[in-house]
Length: 473
Image (tube, rainbow, N blue to C red; front, top):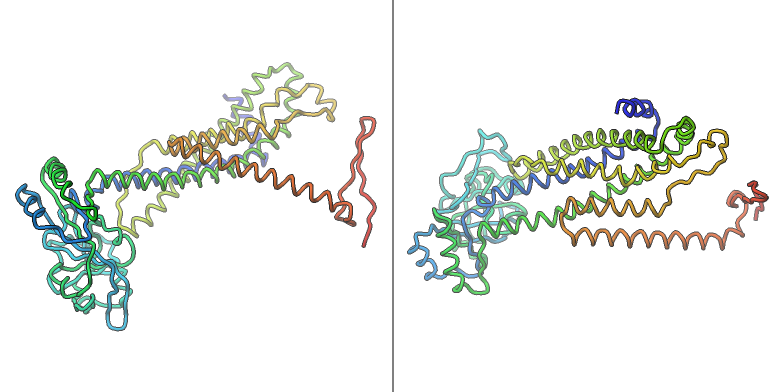
């Protein structure tokens, strides 16, 4: 190992190893940055799914909840809250803005909390406090985006439909519920008692349910499900977590494929650098073989250098990936006020393994032929060297992609689809290249001047080249 490190330090002066190390570090940085951030985001959302739901279960309906269902919940000691969500234009003087509006009763929320402030875009915890109740009748709370868009101040009047309401607080955070509208655009929270005065038609009602015992909610939902119609749906903690997991898995698969494409581009640079490195060391290997060094020892020296360099570059890539995901998490945290959970060790381990896979599949093939170099190469420089075939490198690149996509997606279908897609791209590229060569041969005879290709011929074991005469048209 000491000899391997000494040789690596000496060979570091060559540009090939530097290019190889930089390419590998960038590849690992892309893999680790994406995988670590997705892992943290998944853990955070799954842990906070109950507060995001605003209750233990939510029944969504296009019509108001029937009184019979409400009476059953009361009889079973189920906590209840009612809210209505809709999109509408909010007016303040001559300014107007489309907003996601939620009208809630005094029991909202059953889980989670409402964070409010007197300052726009408040981030300091001292400026944010938990609301003890919902907006009073005649009052509304608006988020910072709506506050800025309408160019208003606290105490100003805004119009929601036909109702004129007073802005009293800045809404910082609220349980999102199952309303997909609240994820986008500006938000406004109002009291349900003011909803009839808006004269805005409603078709998005939520019935929030909670209980001290989770089993009570499960039993109650199972009991009322036969009474629900096709326009009513139920969301629970389990279903919300499953949906979050499915959405995150879809996003993760997309990001994994994109990152693997970036890794393949870095792999091309790694393969080119390794090929140049191996060509530069042909004479050195020939000298070692003339001194009696075995093929196993030669491969051990060069493979050892490559693995040590790969491990160091992968570690640097992990550090860069950590910085990248911290930067992204910092901006997302301040934009959406999400407290991210810490990441597990799996993304780091998988990214490090991914870096070693890149080394094995892109760099090692270029070094594998070195022990086959004859010792006579020292005296006869013209002796040919059997370099690895291009088809072998393509196969190993496909193998690297299969392994990387399989490791990070853990989905056979995604792995096979990505591999098939890459194969199709490679075949199309080869066909297009072949057609371009054929077409170029049809026109090459009519070209003159510097556009003429150099003519090369061989006779009696000797090769010679000459530039054809110039013909200007």
